[in-house]
Image 1: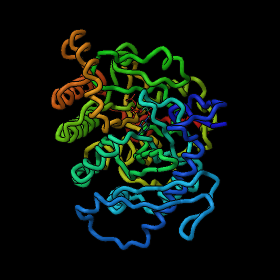
Image 2: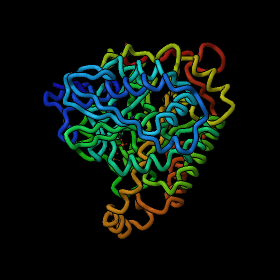
Image 3: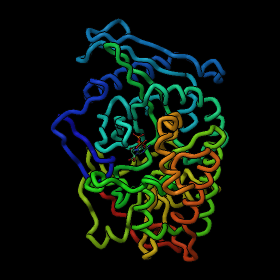
Image 4: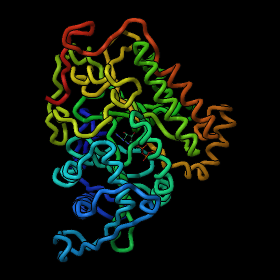
Length: 421
Ligand code: ATP
């Protein structure tokens, strides 16, 4: 029996009754192995003194065997024997530190609290787990994606180091679980959509129109993730004040250039829209957070630059002021109908460029279908089209300023009702 949460949002909490498996491994065995493995490796790292990251650190793979009967290094457990590999442990420790994640907090989030399985992940068949505190997502990745991330790391983190205010995915760990001849690779990354805020709409946007409509199966879900064509049908755009709009565009532009420099494409903007007005009209509270959340982000925020508001460029002052005003890290915006919104967003799915080769047939068909609108194209073209779509169709500038649900001042005198009470 497995407990799953649709997309980690307030919407659909489903009990599938049949436990999911990944490469013949049950989800519970996988969760158990993740927690035991990360518990060991993070604990082990504390004995290693802090020092500057060197190039060779990116190629280190640490490995430990965890037999079910236990060993002098590892505890006994109820799962089959497995080996746990940690890629570039010192480099990832440095990156976690860059985002203010202390070893104890990382351990607590990933190991001490239950992991929540997301029930409606993407088409790739990956499993996704969310930590109970909403901070981290664990995604199973293919061998080629893990290899790609390893190669990407030094350059990618050079960019993040220079510019931590970014909507690019932040990877906090890369691991592999080996058992019975099976390898399961995992990345730990930042969670874009806090489960504690009810998302009225979710979108996965690429700036392409070819086959960019959510399937019927997806639409039938309690919390569907819509696509580009759906967005155009549903919303005329999301309206921001000029400063926020400019900050958001600057961030996206910079991020797209980084991805282009690594020849990455086919990434998506994951977008969550929380409608404040609607919730108020409907009488506010929407019940407790699925998966045991208490409905609030931790009062003391542990991960730096982790919210949408903090991720976008600017001097950070406006963001700080708003964060304390219960925006839950979302960016205040308005719909074309003047509804007040909070926007949550981040770029996801950047490790799959290699899949393009397999998609040649698809891209050929798409080319015939509508010329330039293929979702697979040159990285520069992809980035430009992505930016154009975001800056004109999705995000728009408005004159009237809405600064979020603030207490006093020029904003709104609304208290944000969090979905989970
Ligand atoms: P596809 O093959 O369809 O591109 P995939 O299996 O590679 O999918 P992603 O596109 O990375 O998966 O993500 C699928 C879904 O998982 C997203 O639509 C989103 O709902 C959720 N998701 C992925 N990454 C994150 C994240 N960092 N934060 C929150 N939710 C996420």
